[in-house]
Amino acid sequence: LHFPAAAGATGAGNAAMNLLRYWSFSLFFVVSELWASAGVPLLFWQCANDVTPMSQAKRFYPLFAVTGNLAPIFSGKIMSFVISLQKTNDDIGFGSTLKTLSVIKAAVGICIVAIYQRVYAMAEERDRKERTEQSLSTIRGIQKSGKVEITMKFEKPKKKLTLKESAKELMASRELKAMAMMVFCYNVCVELTEVLWKALLRKTYPTKSSYMAYMARFSQTVGWVAFFLQLVASEIINVFGWKWTAMIPPVTMGVLAVAFFAAIIAGEEHIPLAQALLIGTVQNVANKVTKYSLFDPCKEMAYIPLGPDAKVKGKAAVDVLGARLGRSMGSATQQLLVFLVGGASGSILNCAPYLGTCYVAAIAVWSNAVSVLGKLFDTTDDSPKVDNTQKLEKIGEAITIIKSIEDAKREKKKKNSGQSEAGK
Image (cartoon, rainbow, N blue to C red; front, side, top):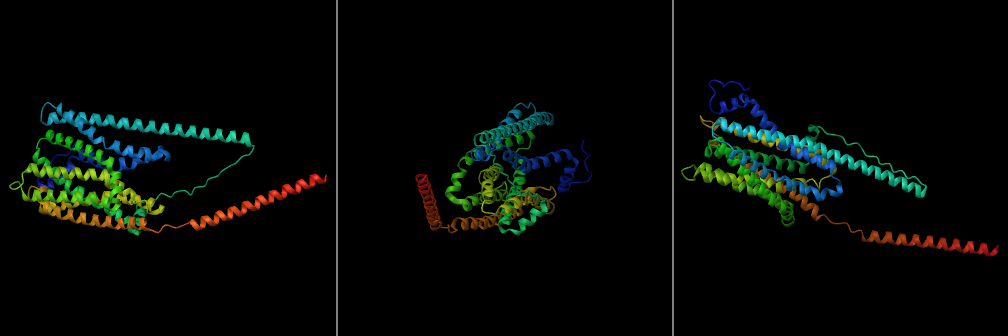
């Protein structure tokens, strides 16, 4: 299934060739990245928008977000259980574990398809009942009044923009550029620390089973922390406001990342490997938890003060271009540094000082983008409110005058009709 090993390839060159050699594994992780960036944020929320009535959105959307944070907990528990059943720590035992996890993933995928079909079928049935009830109500109204009222609603067809057109809209708006920069810098920061942390993790846990067991515990930790932080996220936004809440992810990630890079640069002689790994684990937990609980809500809130055209046209560019370009930039930076300063072994750990510098620069740009958007919210909050009291008073006076005139006409009409009857 896979290609034979390339002769003469060493270090970083060998790592690059292995991506092509083990093409099925590379394809699997590419699809996994697409699922994380497009599957859940785009497809799930599109489905939720299609089947959830506006009257129930406020009730169920927060529940969707909180329930989604339970997924890492369950997946971590399942991974830990499957690994505990592994009899040997060699490739045969690890292969059986992967096969079991693959079967579970396939079963979950089939369940997703079945639930998706069922949800849309239920939504169509509900809409059909609502249309039937509306038609019956209209018929009953006709029978009572004998009148037919037809309401015609014309909607301007929405034009679907290409990615190029969305990018042009993004470049024309200062706010959208700031939002795209937030998403771009976040993904750059995650890429710069995640690969380095996993390299340290492989060094600490050399066997595949121990590595997977640690990742299972990491997944559970992310799920629990994100679950509880999600419950208080709205209160954090209410207390600190948009700007300072949006500043929490870059500040938290930046402080922990500086400590992580410093631990790696200091070396095992000064800081034990286990302590460096612990700092990196806490930093990566903060990466994911702050994104789910604070970064994403703040990003979506940033669309509110913008016009409707900017929301529709710029969202695709912000979410797609910002995220994918950020990941690509982070990966390209690491690959370039591995080729230049990775040494004969091509180790990413040798690049820690340079990666740390790039990380701090990304945090600075991210914080500046938050400040730009923060001014937009400040302007919106401080904008003078129009006092319509005088206009409402004048409208009330006009209604009173019109009502007095109508009453006078009715009285005059009654008086004239009474005189005519008396004359008869």
